[in-house]
Length: 485
Image (cartoon, rainbow, N blue to C red):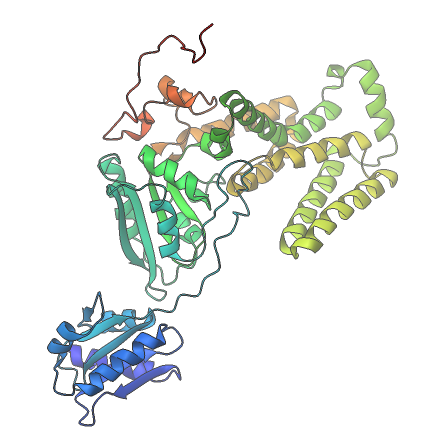
């Protein structure tokens, strides 16, 4: 059965022009197989072939012991044969397919250089970002966590793509139940092709229909190193420049690694500013609709005169002008992201100025609303993680429609629905709103507030790590001075 399966695999591969099958000896006793387009290190390849041809008396077993190549593996099934061929290995076996094949790894690695992370730019911290090569990405993490307890567990995903996926965790720290949950969800995946870690995230997340991401995607090795040290699990996929961290909480999407590289008061202030900016971005335009439609009495008289004068020639209700400007901003943002970088920046700046000015002059929207929409767009850009920025952009529209229907009551209803949804979300089974719910006072040291590093002697309790302490806290001593006074 194995013979027929391997012969069928060889027959299928032979339909490709880059698949090579050649006999090493004149008696056709040993043959070798490889894909020319994915096999690299041709110099070592030629040395191995020359050695085999110079020793025609050696069997497959003897070649395994005598070939000057490290990490020689064996393949016995058709699946193993095809997997190694597709990964750029040279396979050597008896022409009658009667013994295991020798697998010599000569993989060709085509990858870009390590560059600055594009979506999570660092001001004061490390500049390195992940690339599309799994081995390079693992190297970037091992460089930062240089202990044998860092475990890299590799598996294959996709019945067609055969993508390599690595599970990274810190042995002796990570919770066994969490690790078992991650492994089980990955084993249950039944899909033919995986090209990016985002596809894996959609299939293993707790609530795939939620607009909020429950697993954090990052391209920064320093963020991954911090998360793994805390007791979290990281997934890396070959061909994807992103890592997938879990479990995660809502607050982590507003935290940036730069917060830990600045002085802690500065880092805490910037983090609080991001959270306030996102809240403003979600509710600002809906507040404008509620006030101008239902609650005029809340506007001071001086400001009311300004707002009325700016809307005197606008021919439709506030919700229409809000939708016009919001959709225009979204179109400009999407066009700027899809166009080449230089053109995209120009379109965003020039388009925003020209269209905004034209809309106000044509009396299609008031100047006050234009300022509010521009501020909400700027506030939505303060989120360090791109996933959360998309969720914030989408959330504005339900608030706008509820504000048009019921005013402040509608906004309150929408807030309650949003809060209820967040309370039900989980990440790998862990509460999404931790440490707020369930309340963990000790974990507030690195959530809304960013306390000094010497105050964070314990890992987050919500993760239930095996080793709670990160370092032993020392008793405070009286400050000493090098210069005697």
